[in-house]
Length: 290
Image (cartoon, rainbow, N blue to C red; front, side, top):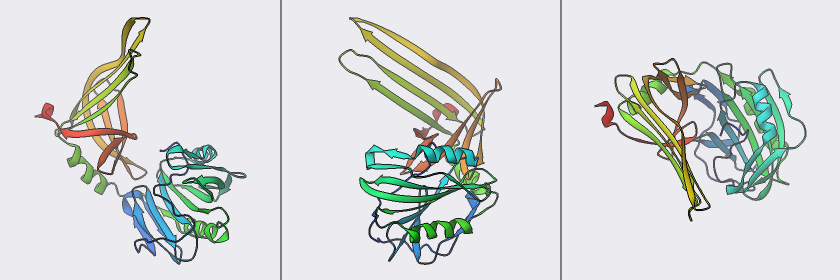
């Protein structure tokens, strides 16, 4: 998800107000190193990607979304990519120029569709000196978007304060949850009718003593003119030590191999599923470590 500038985390009711939990006033997220003040009249709730706010009389939504970009240049490039998601009818592209916002941000206007409805949006992206940051977005149905939503975005952006994330709680939560477990990624495709396919698999054994086992394999099968061939690559196994780190408030799994190489995965747990670098992994009790 880090390749796009805007992430719409919920179904949007752009032209009418809706019901929200009563999150108002100052919001302080220690593990992200983030503090901001909700504009007057807006109320909301936390979401897996950040925060979502609505207003009783102002159409549309106000969103605060975490990102992992490290510079305004990266934010600018991502803004120019916009957001295309055919699954929920979202297609927002920059209208006009991407402009500088303060010393650590950019701002841009967007237009297109959200959930197949014509929509407009205004966004300010900010980069934290400690890594990552937030994107603040105001969006509403076309014809109902204007100064009120833009003012809310700018008011909230002006209140943002970054600090060094408090990583102790993050590590304390994740480490016992991973230690002694096997993480498995599997992906395969079969075209059918003898056309071939592929299979990818990765297994990480995270032992409680800080060591790990690692195996990955990738196989492609090609069938043509009655013949067939199997080609395999990226096969190997390694071992070393594992640990957790935090970047921009997001937990990361770090594998350090005995040969000096290392791998880093950004961890995410949402909808009762574990993701490493955006890919679904299965977490099971690890007999290899016993």
